Image (cartoon, rainbow, N blue to C red):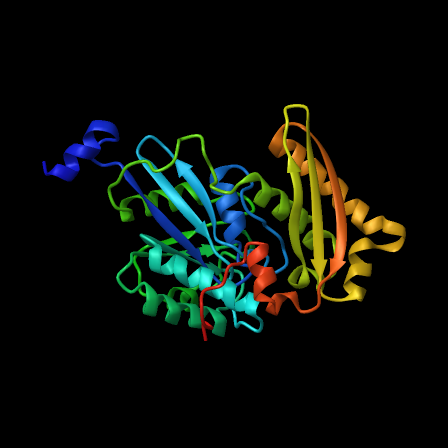
Length: 312
């Protein structure tokens, strides 16, 4: 037994596995939904509208023998704004750091050019990293459907069929990932499922409700900043500022006589009360900040810190 083996056998067992799994795919293939399903609780926005995940989010799955750190990344897409550049940087950085790449593909629809572009990105940034192909949305696939085009996207023996929405295939997924991880210790306490702080979770919860309840245009032009967060055993006080880019978008978020912003607040408050296990007083304001998605100073302020240079 070498020195590394002896270290791990003392506390974790000689075959304890741990590491980062970068969950990669084009927008709206179910990355966040899959991670939430594996963890058994929500740690990331999971919405039907594409490009909702913006920041790297870590979901932590722990057993006695394994700790898998799932990195939920923004969908890889063609960037059109500085925010899009930022999102691509997040996804690409995750590929560089990963011990394993988990590539999610929508099995219910034919592969697209975007899928092939992702294959190119993976081959450039993670060519030496173990790769598993996850054919998600298998509940929508006919038994006779030909999936050969999906399998031809990449040469890997590690292929799993899942349905994140129905929690199918999750055991097979975990069984596939575990032996691909390096031996290592537990990096987080067993009960921890996310590294996100509560201000971030509160902002993402409000943004999720905006995505769910408003029109197609709004999700990509909204940012949420928590101006006040006071947590106590009895009540948590949260003030959220919602930013959009145009007055017309502000009108949509507020709604007729404030009806939409009230619905957003009620839905977000209900989720936050479950998460915080206290009563929640949630106040929201909507502001217009033109072209904020190209305003690097503002983006840094709300947590979208850009690397220097464009991703191309």
